[in-house]
Image (cartoon, rainbow, N blue to C red; front, side, top):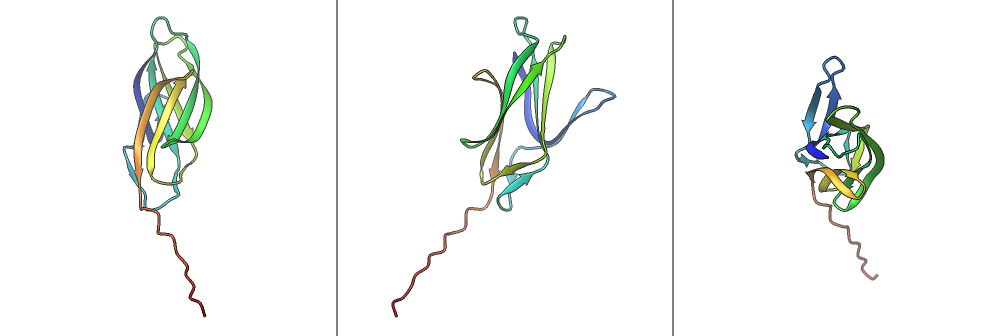
Length: 137
């Protein structure tokens, strides 16, 4: 299997009349005013091409990470039907980013990363901790 495209965006939609894909607001990097940051909606698109020896159906997993912290890990099915190419479109109604870091979306087949897309999320540093001191009376 060959990965032709991987991306994350606010929206990925398929036109029912033409079967064409459109993406809106591709996440190349985000500058958050503060955290937590809600990305609503959040979509991922993976375009895959089957090689001759590949099965038409393959069990896979979709994984989302913020740095090394796993945000989501769920099963999905890649189904080429009778075609050479297929598109995996994943849509979340909301993704909460707790702090700055690199968001990575992965499509895994077994333990192998088939497709991957990453983008940075930057934001203000955490506010300094308040220190309380007391004076003896």
